[in-house]
Image: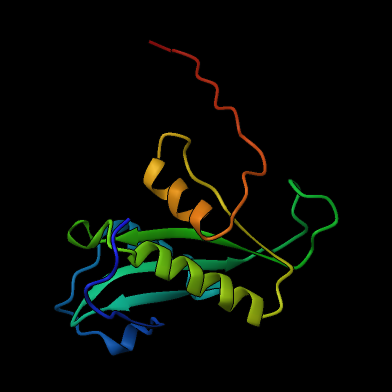
Length: 142
């Protein structure tokens, strides 16, 4: 992972701060809808949004981790392709960890596919430890 040759500003995303001209992909729109209710989005900016991280508050005990009631989850981490491999994802993830800590959460979780090596490297670099694996089954209908 490269070092940043620029200094992005990270701040909480407020929809009103952005003009309708700025376009967001459909994934971002879905994440934004969810985070309006139970979470926060932070953006990295260098004259434009170059990446974002979405954090949600766990709504019940973590069924996958006994007796954890006060937890957060990184729902989405996205960095524009031109800015990938320059440390933006790491910067956003470390910021999210700090924010979760400051908000009093006892744990923060993140899930990713096992084949998403870049994301897994970011999470490991930021101190996340693999906790469990989910097995996905498939049944061919046609």
